[in-house]
Image (cartoon, rainbow, N blue to C red):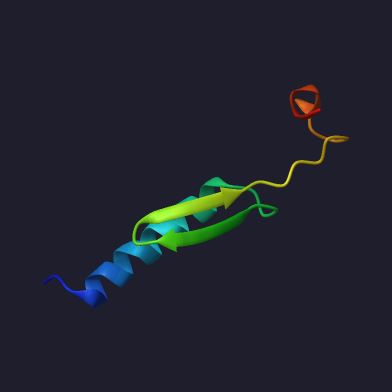
Length: 54
């Protein structure tokens, strides 16, 4: 029941869940194994928390 095929399916499921949680302007990168990086684009002129990014 385990193996590369199952592991790949689990990683795809995790990636789909992460993708559903972040905005379309975000970039999701799989670093290695089960490590992911999320880069979030912030438009300081439109973001209500813009003071936090200056």
